[in-house]
Length: 415
Image (cartoon, rainbow, N blue to C red):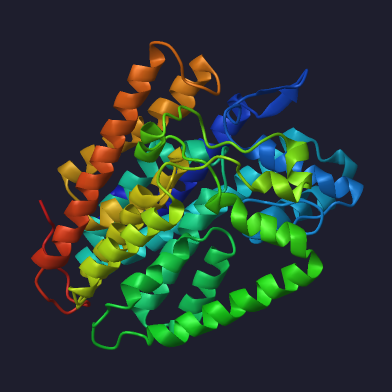
């Protein structure tokens, strides 16, 4: 590839940003007569914006209203709204958030390239970086959610940990956990890490746990009732868009109630009694996921990344629901572990299935799937869950199949 334009990552970054700018210009998110228009129409950014507007009345997250997310994201939205002032309408807010997500996804490009170069060498790393840049899911979710930031923290903590930088890896996991709780799953993987020179995962764990205790202690002092409501919101959420939802006969999305519901702490407590209690699902997850990993010792970098994919997928399968943005953390892991045609085809299939029920099906049937669409919904959910299970088993098999190699040695490209 000497002299090839495809080796120029600065050109790739320029095209990556240009695609997002052009899409924003031709389908700018806006609100007209109470209806959202543009690329963000069926995303969550308007929901985040309207919650952040509570701060215009002096109502702050974790004190006056609860959030189903850890504090970093709701506070970031409040800061953007407060700094923007009266001139910050929804279109400008969406532009600011799209810029933040694009910056995070540029970081994801660089981290993916760095991890792939460590595993496979420069040529294969460039190929995988271009493939990620061409994927439609990260492009679309630039305007829908904040999960590009979550992926950034997940990849950054993984990269720093593999590099042996324990302190910065701990800081990345902490910031990631304060954005969404997913980065805490990495500790399950680090527990089985036996690579030469691997960082002391217990020190990282204690740093993160003590820091989280301090942050949530401060939030509890700031507003105990809403902090408790925020912590229990996801735990008490009814099943949605998953195999567990089908077992309970639930054919709805995972959307929370209207904006005023966030002002009542009791609204984060669901009155629905699940068919399968949460403690039973998560107990089974701990028994299976931790039990299977306990039988394996991770002795090289690729196995570490495969274990991350495995533990993330077991978490998804045990969770009471499914959201299409959950695919975003999986994309770079699939590319890194399965840099093959089969891996790419898996990404394509999962991308289509991730959007098939929401937004595609729900946009046509409303918040509750009924009538003839119900059979299609059941088929989509079952097929997607089956693919996630198959992919989970494929990740686990990689823990056993790879030979032990020195991490600095390039390996032959997998075909």
